[in-house]
Image (cartoon, rainbow, N blue to C red; front, side, top):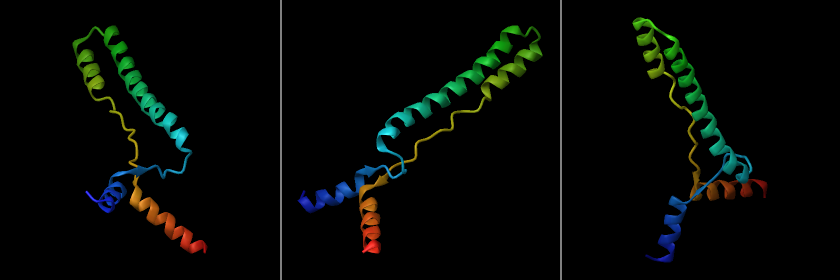
Length: 99
């Protein structure tokens, strides 16, 4: 593979964070967001299961079981980073505008 081909492959596969935050804060905020989402899901299921232990009627048990199974699944997803080639193109275009 020639150096030029390696460079093109790098531009296509390498990614850069363009979200706008400090990149160091993303290292903390991404795991934190995932953890908070998982905790919320677990909390919702635990509260439904607490009702389950208190219920004595069969209809109540079925309703609570349906509630536990239908709790909202996790929604938070990380936005993918931008390909390096696109980031460099945008950066050079911005530099051309300011000159």
